[in-house]
Length: 179
Image (tube, rainbow, N blue to C red; front, side):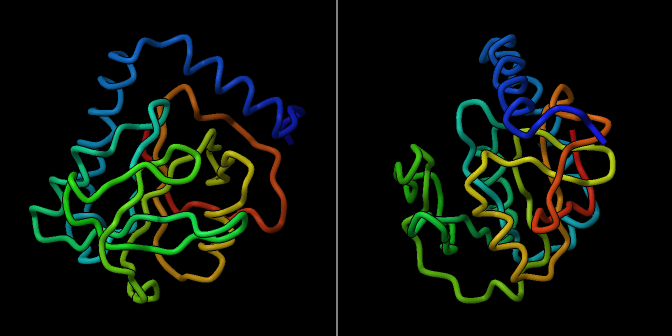
């Protein structure tokens, strides 16, 4: 088991992200998103849960639009309380607004088809080779993903991959990680 606490790993990853310029992160993001776009699970999926990236996450905004224009139904999370999020349909870049935690959130129709999600693309602070994910510590994705059965792809920069992460029983594992 990794001897670093979740708090220590989050601090380390924040520093690793700061060690890269915005352009370097954008370039790394483009490579990750190209791998994602050509992934067989993504290519055959109809309903995809994605996320609108924060500045220090793998950049997804262009990919959201590419998938939408390819005929995919893209769902994005909207934080509704200290503990919960709901999903809304992504309708294009003009349908995003800044919501909780400065995250871009959709203004599209509320989605009640979470059970039909073909694949969920999930960000994280760090991932390990076994599929464990370390989020930002609020638990939104873990609570949501515990209620939904879907294929889960974590996406991150290469420097966010670790051999092992400290994890808890309620932490939801990814089926695969693209970095």
